[in-house]
Image (cartoon, rainbow, N blue to C red; front, side, top):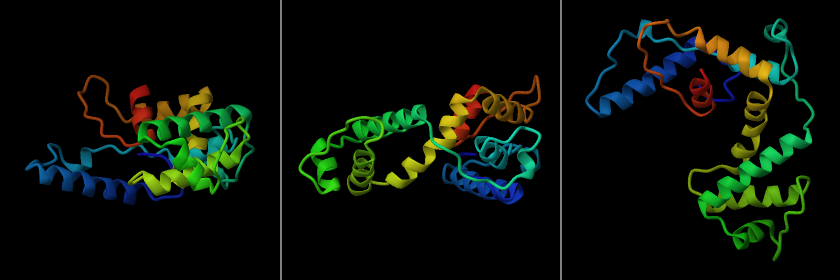
Length: 184
């Protein structure tokens, strides 16, 4: 699964994903080639968010999720992600400036949050199906998964346990789950 799946029921989430998968297969005249009972759905949503919040592997299942401080490397990561998305979407500096309500928006460093807000607003206005707020929110847990080897190793180990050694498998993944699946 992708990110932001914490506090969800894993069984219900698997059912939702299987319904969507079956709907897509049906549109192509296909059926799931195995019984649904054989589909494995590794659920790491709660573990990821709890470890991102700084909890240990042992304590992660017992905590209530709270926010944590942002570091400079995370700020640079967010800026780089937003810039890449804006570039690929073809957003111009003029569109970003218009979204800011200014004639000129300068990016003067990672703490120039006015620029970040302007680029997110421009994405909301000019990029179909892109939500700037979603892009801004996604970066913290993704950043922690990529940066923190303890979090990454624990999540990867749990997802890897869904595979049966020596048995060919098809992996269907989404969003951050694609990165996790690739690592596994």
